[in-house]
Image (cartoon, rainbow, N blue to C red; front, side):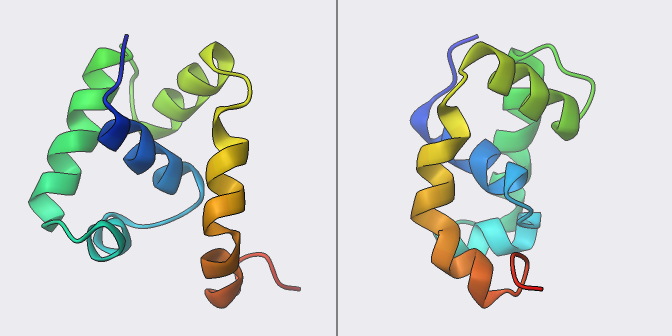
Length: 84
């Protein structure tokens, strides 16, 4: 179940609400490459879908999302996801 650092970063952005296209722009990769990474990590985690993959990985790695939340907190506020 070992995910690559890039797969972990992509899964983190998915968990934070980024679309595949937004992830591609943020990480400077093609949309198809983002989809490939997501599909591979879903298979590695034996998940049914991306939401299930997030849950499985969070249960395995309790403090996983906190570091990425801090890293991308400002950009999330810029998208007005956390405001209101």
